[in-house]
Length: 360
Ligand code: PHE
Image (tube, rainbow, N blue to C red):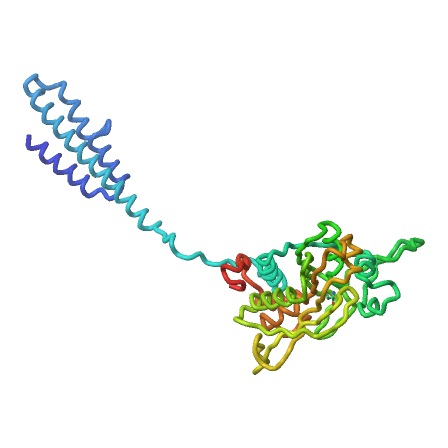
């Protein structure tokens, strides 16, 4: 049986050195395939005499089984190696932080609206809305500004066209968010606690004025609301918004037709080396108008001034955005310059909330 030992050595050697599954398959075909060497030897058994056939057949069976076993073992080893190699080459660290993709930025005005909404929501204020094209009744009359009142001129109003022959007073682009006071009280009655952020329009354009800008109106009506509540709410808001431990506000007596008494509010700040700091220093910056809602305004909105009272304020959103984020020129807010937006914009997925820190 010497010939079989040589065959065995040849094929086991070939199996051992087969480096791939296809090389291994070639070895299998050469040995055990239909036309393979072992199969050919098997087919010679028929011509042998019975004793020889028995001995040779048994030896060939053993040889075939050994080669077959070697082939199977090698095949599974190659399979394991291939899997290991794939696992190695396709390995990836799923714990690595994702690479941020630029997907546009949030405009500072939108960011500040989200921030102030979060702060006022925490104090129990809901968000109310009104149209930007407003009737002159909501924008003026209901707010105690009758047609001949000088405040109408001060508002630099944009008027909408009426159809020719339609002599009703024209609609206006709202000059402030105060008409939302009337709409909210008419819809919801008292008590009520709302803010109304949004766009307003005045015919004005210079370094510190644009014809469209943003205000947030605040309104709180209940049975005993006073100027003291107004002061606390505004201080609390400024502390949270500017993210400083304390702020100082200055209330200056003022006049608005829709509040009595009325006050304009300044915030203490310092300018050192072009850097603005809130809460310290010797400068004051005006940020809002406010007061106790005039009884005539309550009446216009269907709220009984004998039972209800409260405060209102109107704050410039663009102004406080400039203050908080050190943005020098108001006009750049609305020029849609991508370089400006990339510089001053906020990451799209960072939603401000009080727990996570407002401005991230
Ligand atoms: N509407 C006023 C303005 O635009 C601000 C204001 C609102 C004042 C509410 C008092 C109360 O200047």
